[in-house]
Length: 255
Length: 317
Image (cartoon, rainbow over all chains, first blue to last red):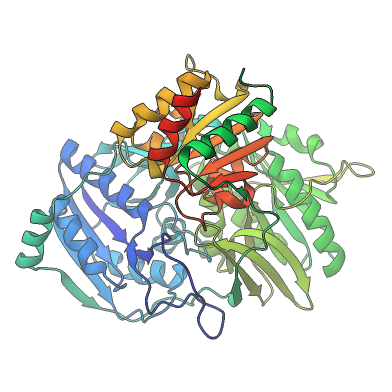
């Protein structure tokens, strides 16, 4: 089974997000970019499938900041190949453009399955896997928590609220949006990542943005108006512990 | 027709979600501004039509392939409805169904989409949506110009429509071609495993998130929960890591809880988590990031390190 896993870099939300001068995007100059957490889950699920039934896992980047590290990390974890689609430009790259560009590249390859993170923190114009499906004319299923199968058919579990899930069967080729892999995402040791970096071998593919764009206009970004804010408890851990226990007692829950 | 606001009825297992009534309420308001109708597309389960109040028209499409949710079948059917009716705007819940069909319809119908919508207004000829971005740390004001568009809407963003006066007209549409020849088939629905503690029944919950760092540290929090006589619950990263069973997960894809006290450690408060716990009577949050969104819904908070605070609490009980 030949599996493509798109890897997207997003701003690290641990950091403070500042706005650019126009107020319609985050200021990217000093931001740290990390692999989208759902893409890490998709990669893990792809590697689990490969371990179970064999096949090839191809990690594909979009030329995002620091994507090389994520691609080499994917190789260190067991991906067979890494491709970087460059030429999409800088700043916020909408999902429609990413999806169309990826679909164009995928249709020139022999691919059975696209396993993508089900969402990302900046996919304002829609989730990548559900956009790619119709663009390729392939069936697509999102919010998936397990993918199993071989040859030309897979079975997936699609998650709903309240812990329910549905089992579905799909004939390949198909696109799956991964919510969580069956197992926690593996780690790659620094040594393995360094080895991958030294070996090199990311295939650079120069592209230009495909498709018609997102068709929306982001007028401005702004911080949500706070309906309220917690009253902050300060002091030593012992002081704060006393206050918290008093609060719990005030609800009649602790003697 | 071209001024209509169309809502996709969100249902699974024969039950309409609360989101559907919220979308119908908004559709009715927007249709007033565009001079169109509030129309609901109900795929499969035609019997649910009588539960949809407040809309002008309910369009039903029925076929065996639509009975249970099948993304491929539903997308074909929804595309058929919008191609025939050409609504100005399509509203879809940001549920599992919406995660498939919002973007899927956007690509298939070639219409722009605003995902994670929490606010929506007609502004002259444009529709202007407000949407969550960057884990709810920011909001985006987004204009959809042109003659069609789609919004996937976060649960709880709009008040639910009342039953309204009179019931909507129900119109059955013929299913589109191709539903007998699908690549996707629905096999079965799997209900959550029982047997574990029911966290929705607890008055006090101790809840842990990513900030706990490693599985070894779970012991400290478990010890505190035991001392308090409270079950341990968690945000998604903890259950995905297998440190607690799925039955303990609070949030959009887990369980909605409403305890008297919800005490959190190392939970930052992503929108998906807040959706499951914001109605707790008293929320006390511990997180070292003073800017964490959890503090916007918590009543009391502290930025103390949980590894200092948790032992201090256990000690004092």
